[in-house]
Image 1 (cartoon, rainbow, N blue to C red):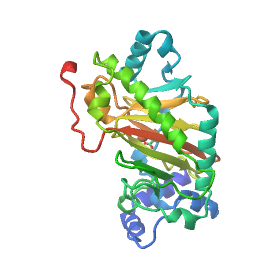
Image 2 (tube, rainbow, N blue to C red):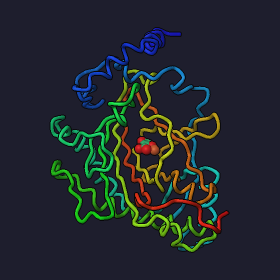
Image 3 (cartoon, protein in one colour):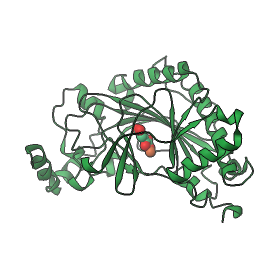
Length: 327
Ligand SMILES: O=C(O)CCC(=O)C(=O)O
Ligand SMILES: [Fe+2]
């Protein structure tokens, strides 16, 4: 056990210390970027994961390429496309999508805007600070800091688009944050994938969309600054996504891992591709055929990582169950 591990086990074994930190409810955590901007050199105790929750090196499979879904094949051979998509969704529940038709300029513009958004002065970002999920604009750090003993090493901006919304109240600053064309492109991609996923279950192409009802979307941008003690922390804990279909765009830094059995597969970032994963409600709608895969994020000692995640979800009042023909 090295010194850092020794120190961390000390903190983990000191529940009164942890409780003390969390009792400071009057002090809102402003985020990990703010900590790093202020010259932090060692992570605070509340970011140190207990040893049983940390990444274990020998259980990580490095540099894994998940199945590739080539959207160009949709035109040339729809049947083969559906088969490949169905196999990837059943065996992995996560795949990369290439030739998706979303212009590189739209993706780069989105990344630029999001980086500027996180670069706003902390007072500006704190105007949006909330732990509520179903609000048009949310800035927060970790997931629900007031309830967490061990926090995650990321900050995020999140938008909830209800299907009743007419015009989304985007933050006024920065002027270059223009996310609406990115959102509509990603929504279109999700609809195309959902039709093919429906067909993969032997159903009409609009069947899954019908079950989703007036679908909703949450757009979440995750900012993972460098972490001084990356082995003690996690950018995001292992979880499955609770919604329908998740469409993720990441930079080239890496850190996203997907779990199969006891092993964590370290996913190699692919330039300008999207990573798509099946979430819980699509697993249910497919009667378990498509898998909602557990995933997590590791942090880096010297690099900031950004991911932009669109959760394409059923309507909040949709009743979800497997369609009769998939029993
Ligand atoms: O940042 C990532 O790559 C994963 C993010 C994620 O899993 C999430 O926001 O649910
Ligand atoms: Fe996720």
